Length: 337
Image (cartoon, rainbow, N blue to C red; front, side, top):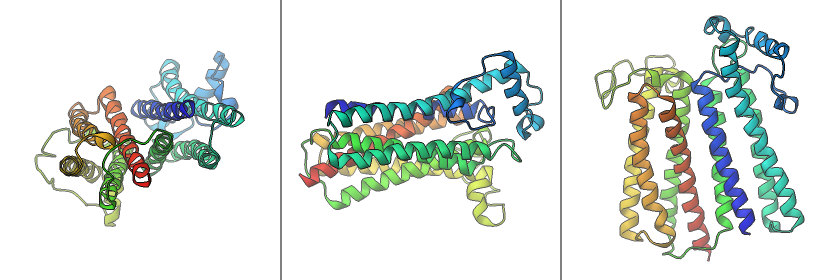
């Protein structure tokens, strides 16, 4: 079981790496530099000046180049191309990193029969994530000058689900930790924390998709107020939640406060009810990371989305989600023992 468990953890870490490179691709405005989807042949980058000209000419046909990046020369194009190519390359390698060991472990009969189909499901989820990536890119090739924030959020949240699923399955192959058995209410409370973190990741994707982090770069006030004027100015009202820059950033800020408060309450209740030993050792770790994440989020805002800080912010969000899922998986096994 140990080699299978390590393999699944490595896959989860690989997903996190792809997410971070994808974040850098978004922040450098590189995501539309490759205008075609060639799942197999696309693994080979341009190898000659003629190949580079073909790729650059294709990029010059989309609105982003004509309306925003018309100043760009070949060297500038190569910079953004390599970010997008690297992101796609890593995504392709994830498929190989899953499929090859999976077949080997099947032949060696290391994977329990009950785990085979769930793992096939993980592979299909990874393949679907690749489709979502192209669906996202295609939204910026004809009318928009960047990808749709809706599709960006779908792509990022699907990656989060994939990473959490990999961690859950990997934890099921771990020996069961000791500790007091949790009640249903405690399990529900921690599922609530996962839901809040997941929702916050989606809200962050909307901020990234709209470049809403580049405005109102003060804290704790936003535009000089706790509740700035101008929220919900679009009609119909629901559009403000997804399309109005001020409202989208305001929501992301306040969801962060809610997640932090919820995590502190979970830590306080967990310490009083179970202590921090055995399976419940996850609780203080989660609490510390959540508080750290709030600080990194504020730093991202105040730095006007400094790229390294923003990437740490994104990686921490996924790490927190994975840690809460690991805790839930451990508690689930403990409750069934």
